[in-house]
Amino acid sequence: MVREKLLESGLSLLEEKGFNATGLQEISTAAGVLKGSFYNYFPSKDAFAVEVIRYYTVQHIARWEQLLDDSSSEAPYQALEEVFLQLVRRYEGADPKKGCLIGNLAGEISEASEDCRLAMKAAIGDFKAILTKRFASGQQTGKVRSDLTANQLADLFWDAWQGSLLRMKIENSAQPVKDILETLFGRLLVPPGILQKEE
Image (cartoon, rainbow, N blue to C red; front, top):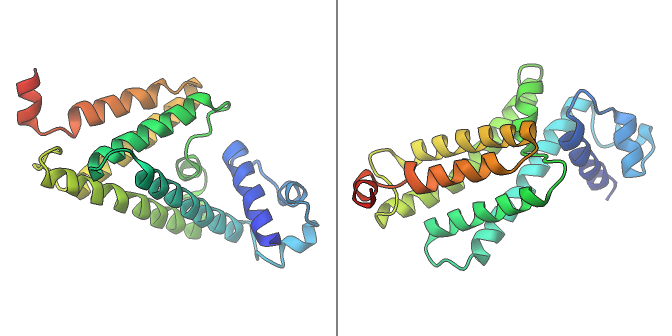
C-alpha cells in the first residue's frame, strides 16, 4: 500500500517535473509518507525511478490492451488506429500536456543511469510488441504495407509518435500528434499500390 502510494506520487511528479527537479522529500510528502520510510521500499532514487518506469509501463500496457479490447473495430489493425485517436482526444483535453514518461526521461537520465536506461529499453520493447503484432495483422489483410517488416514499421511508428509527443509539449498543443497519426495511418503505413490508386 505504502509502496504503491510512493510509486503513484513519484509517477505524477516525474511526469510533471522530471527526475532531477523531483526530490525524495517531495515524493514522500505527496504520498503522505515520512521520508525515512522511503528507504524501506527503495534503496535509492535511481532504483525508485526504475520501479516508476516499470509501474508506468504496466499501467499503460493495460490501458492500451483495454482500449483495444473495447474498440468497436473487429479488425486488430483498425482497432489500433482507433485507440491512438482516443489517446489524441485525451491529450487535447489535458493541460499541461505531459506526453510520455519514457520519452520525457530518456534525454534526462538514460546516460546518467544504466539501470534506468535498461528499464526504459524494456518498456519500449513491451509497447513495440503490441504495435508489431497489430501491424503484422494488418499486413495479412492487405491494409498495411509489406515491403517493410512489422517490426520495422513498429520502430518507425514509435519514433514518429515519440517525436510528436515532444513537439506537443513544446507547443502546448495536440496538433503535432494529430498530424503524425494522419500521416502514419493515412500514408506511411498504407500499401504503396493502394495509395497510388487513391491519388
